[in-house]
Length: 115
Length: 114
Image (tube, rainbow over all chains, first blue to last red; front, side, top):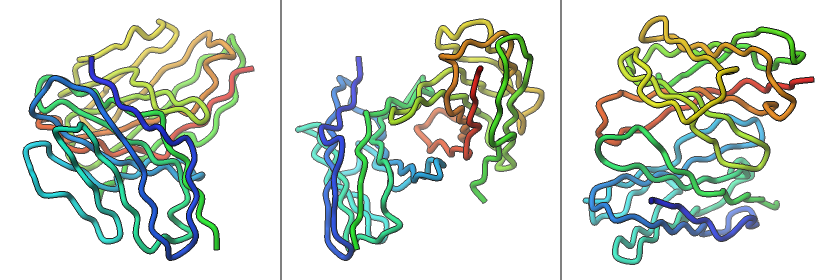
């Protein structure tokens, strides 16, 4: 069975600094997708970044980038130049490439940003 | 436009009430989802509709009844709920071609069962 693990329940960072959120997953599949979602206190879940497992290049979206290590089954999120608006719960999620519509979520990391 | 809308934003109901949650998207997505989320926990999948047909039911109690009237709308009918059903109910949609595309979430309905 596929599982997603986020070992950091809470993280904090100062404004303008860089923070990395960890995510590991377990799967026997070779084709899959990985996602980072952000859920601010206002509660709407927003996609931050997505990575296709078949792509070796790490995905980036502005200040957000991932370090995807397929062999190690690791998918960490780096937030550069942190802003107050980055404060949220961050969920790592996994999805098999075919057959199922299921997203498997990690337990989340709550990120606090201090001025 | 990646908007999924949900109504109402908040709902308080008694255990004998019948109510419905509504979800709408106009992105041409053919897959729609209901999730239940407890505080400080990840969302838990409840139902998946693919091309207006129920494709996944994650062993959800029958007091929750989903309905997909058309490809843009998804309802969740609630009847005889329990206090432990109080949670944030999230709707999501995706293209539905099963190629791992992104799910887009609505803002949720905060449900309180008294």
